[in-house]
Length: 252
Image 1 (cartoon, helix red, strand yellow):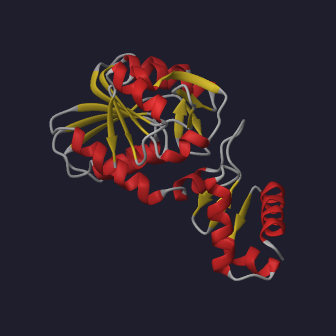
Image 2 (cartoon, rainbow, N blue to C red):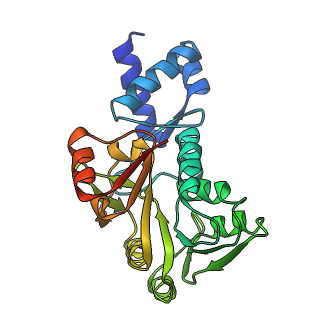
C-alpha cells in the first residue's frame, strides 16, 4: 500500500471511530508500526489529525475530543508549559485555575508553592491541590459537567464574581489566527469571562496544537491578557500583534 492510500485509510478509520491507535491499525493495514506512526506525524502536522498517546484523533470543530484523550495530547509540552507558568507565580499569592488539562498540569507544578489560595471551577484541580498542605483551595459552585469535572453556568460565574485575585490562569480549546480565545460550551465561556474580569493579572496557557484547532464560542482576545505561555510561538503576525499589545510571551 502506497503512502497516499495509507493516509486515506487512516483518515477513513479516524472518521469512522473518532480516533485511531497506531499498533492495531498498523496490523490492519499490513505495515510496520513505525511506518504508521510516521504517517500519523505527517497527518497531524498537516492538521488532519491530533496526536494522542498511542495514536491520533480527529481535530476539534463543534465538539471537543474526549477528556482522557485530551490529557494525552502533547503531554510533555503541557508539563513544560506548567513549569514555566508556575515560575511566574510567587508564594503568598491568590489565583484562579479554570477547566482544562493544561491547567491541571499547572496545578501539579504549583504543589510545592507556599501559602497559595486557589479558586477553581475544576474538580480535578481541586483534587490535585488537596495534596498540597500549603495551599488553600476554594471550589466555585455550579453545574457539574461529568465529562471533565468542570463546574459551569451562572452559579459558578456568580461565585467567582465575589473574588479579586492576583492571577487568573486559564486554558483555551482553540486560538485562531486573529488571537481569539475559543471554547465549546457557552456555560464554560461565561465562567472564563468572569475569571478574566476578577483577576489583577491574566495568564493564558496553551500548547501549539491549539493554533490548528477550531471551536465555536469566543470568550476573549489573546492580546488582552498579560502573559501567554506556550511551547511554540504563534504566527509572525500574531506574535507582533501580541508584543505590540504588551502581552508577554513565554516559550516553554
